[in-house]
Length: 461
Image (tube, rainbow, N blue to C red; front, side, top):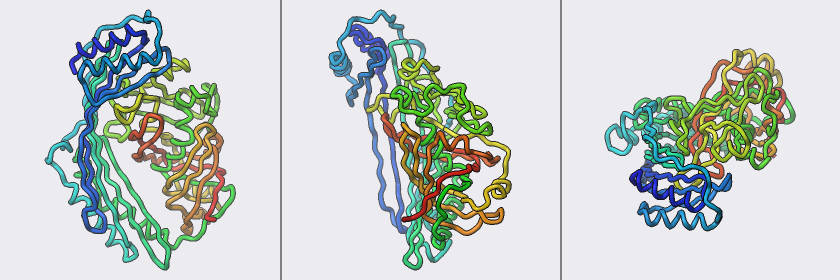
């Protein structure tokens, strides 16, 4: 699509009364390869193309998409959308298309997954399989896979913006099942980055496989967990999933617009222990959740959400910033052209502190050390969460004690924040996928090791 054609379509939307109009063009190439029990389980590749059109009448959003880029098809789509919300022609001035906003290259790609160059996927998967099986005879199943995606987007809007971006992601996944005496446990790892196949070239496949396998084997002999309220040490990296789910989503303007957040109206107030600073940063080079521009074409940024316990800001998109009267943070995201963008997290984490694990262990006697979080559920409106723990240990005599299995953490995110007593110096990010109203998007969660006192711990029924 050429800019002049886009301009004509945007002008038509304005003539039909839209206050703002936007065209989002996307072409994505993706692929995956998986190995299970030493055999290739699946291999896939494909391309997806489409264009999304968004009209705003005030903060009312009308959205449609098509796999055609013919100008007459897009004109028809605009007319159909506008017919759903007829109105007088807006007085907002249409700005002609500006110079293109180009990416700055902070996420360089050495081995483009779209070509065969640098493709070592099968070698990596076989290394993972062999390493995991060599850990113990109790390892009975190994599954490993890689995924990659390359998206080229172009965006035009009625304020004159023309932005383009090329986004590349690559990830490896490992799942190891151990079995003994009728018990089965699973260990998982899933590193990823905003890179091409150079990510796989640099991946410590042996170390990644060993970590997953050793975790699965260790947890076979784990006892049932303690239950009740107690101090809990949350491991670094993926431990940040609790903050992401129970606190991050309620800090998005989507929740604020619906008045479905315990953080509404609390900017400037103390909402966490003063040792807590929380950030959502889309600018980290190579990080899984980073962007150069968001899906409205706004340059991404580092957004401090909580500073020394005080709520500073929400994450916003255009509609959320307008409706809630907050600054625009470059957080508009969508899974693909099939979705209208909304405010979403990027790389969201609790920043590093000064405490050590040994100090936390000394302060958490009789508690639980949750090294690796599993899955869970959250009610974003209330912050209530329930998360399983994949790897955990009792804290005994100031040390890491016996392993336990089947524990869950239960609580409310906004109530947990003031209970964070110590923040570690071992910060780590971990990649993941976040689902919300605009689909699935790549994000990072993260934190250093934290001591929370107390959290309600539940056991197996």
